[in-house]
Image (tube, rainbow, N blue to C red):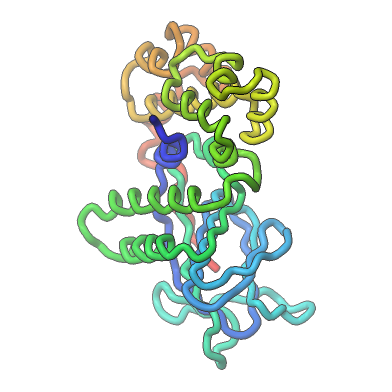
Length: 315
């Protein structure tokens, strides 16, 4: 059976932006306001604190892994609090790819490998909305090893570097997402897959997006009453079942159009529409432009992929 989580990560088309080693000594604090870039961090040694969007800080310890699929505002800081009124810390470059935070007169008490990746999918916002706002995995050495491999590969000029990096990032994201607690956190695909009943319906949608699904049919697959299934799905996933089906069909269609994988009639049939005209109406209503226009714009914009790396220094 199709794995919905693997499909979503594959469609996101992750690519490496950059990664850096950071050492923290004494009291320090870095605050980042980003344009929704995916941020990850693995604590190689020591401990520090992370707070997302002004929320309560969480303590990160050795071998902890954090992923923020769409980082907009977050703070990483030393365990010891900064003095009142102190300014945020400016990273000092020690050598290419390595930065010091805090006092140069003290031995580092924490070492983090941090980085950003980019999602090249034109539907990245929709797909990211299906994921948790924050993934925190404790003590999974597999994730630490994967992050180190991403870091090493991103700095090497080996053949097929971009292909290897893309696959490593896909594995990293899947491993991080499936390692987290799925029954808590923000609504999305992960919470839906954590519910055994809803997971059956979600897998059917992803396996057979062309089927003429109704709420009643999906509720039957999930062995729930129609009303219970609808409310349970909406609360766990964040959208109603038919809205999720529509979003997934449109995400698949946009991917096919981007890759020029068939004509409009063929794409329409492969995402569950009886005719090209019916599909075009639905696509235009959902995306804002007809599929032919969307495909042309994607072709014209290939020279500047969505989600291109942005300049900056990771904390």
